[in-house]
Amino acid sequence: MPSIPCFKAYDIRGKVPDQLNTDLAHKIGLAYANHLQPKTVAIGHDIRLESPELAEALTKGLIQGGADVYDLGLCGTEEIYFATFYHGFDGGIMVTASHNPKGYNGMKLVTEGARPISGDTGLKAIAQRIEDQALTPAAKPGQHHALPDKTAYIQHLLGYVTPQTLKRQKIVFNCGNGSAAAMIESLISQLPIDPIYLHCEPDGHFPNGVPNPLLHENRQETAQAVVQHQADFGVAWDGDFDRCFLFDEKGQFIEGYYLVGLIAERLLQDHPGEKILHDPRLTWNTIELVEKAGGLPIESKTGHAFIKERMRKENALYGGEMSSHHYFRDFTYCDSGMIPWLLIMQQLSDTQQPLSRLVAHCQKAYPCSGEINHTVADIPATLAAIQTHFQGQAPSISQIDGLSLDFDSWRLNVRASNTEPLLRINIETRGNADLVQEKLKEVEAIIQQTKRESS
Image (cartoon, rainbow, N blue to C red):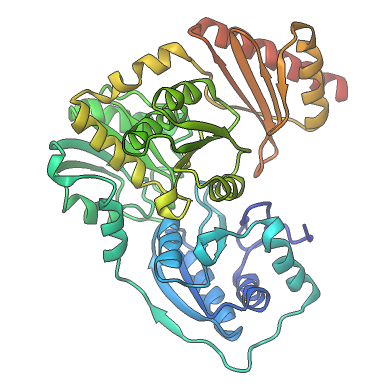
């Protein structure tokens, strides 16, 4: 990757204004137009304070490069995906830093059909153009068009449920002061929902903390609201709402791993025999549920670019990651933070069971650690030390994504983050929650020993 710090493997992400600013945003727009030669591009931005001016500079660059820009304004990332494939645009760019802390911003880029642009599919080339100053204004500039109408997108989302069969449900919605509120209000006006709103006022100052429900400290308020209001379940989003996180009627946070299997079961009811993609971090529960439902589980490397590419290759019905990214063929293989909770609402109505009961068997059968992160300087050496430590126990070994060790009673995946300098640990067992903690301590001891040896 060229040496522009904010260009990452999958997207653009960096501190504002040191790593990403309006000057660079303008150049990104012009480089995108020069490299891809699009006639039409959808753009939008999240609620971060710098996002509108970055989007404006990006727009000027695209227009200077000859592209007509269709501007959604404040929106979620998946709205850019939808607009790109629904309207047949040649590309789309979302200005967002998702769940990153305040002071960061970024961009997610797609081409026609909402196909992701990553390092290997154009991001490196765009960065290189900027470094080489190979930026050429078009002979005829493009034009700017506002695209505020969300009707088609709302109707698409409603197609994942059968409204007349839904029972009335009380749901807690925690928007985290992000971009989800407008979409929620539009949806619930057409569904039998009694809403409880938390932090649904868009506010880039993040007065209630960065919208990242993966942080344990950010879960308590949603959990308490579910219990206090005796809600059927709760939903929380990150800032650009391409991921949603669910809480059952007891206020318990549900690991994304168990939702993958539940959503797969739901979709396979109407599409038996279809392929379901999952990531390698936690697998046993998903494989069991998909096979019982008559589907074909397929393992894919972690990361949205890999998942989307593999889904297209396999024509998979659905793909799920334990990080709460959920991908749908009918959503042009893209991830959505709105479709999952709608499917769960339908499942609760159809089964007449609470959410806690729908996942209880899976949680008991395959207890897991959740993702544990460690800052590690020498990741290759650490992975080698872990593999050597367990070699004598003759595990099944896979290196599709990091290091996966598969034993009779437990399973481990350790991998480097694609976006942060972290080593991520995931452990699951066959019905033994105590073993999860035992093996986690054993793995963490190896990490600490490796750190001491390399210091």
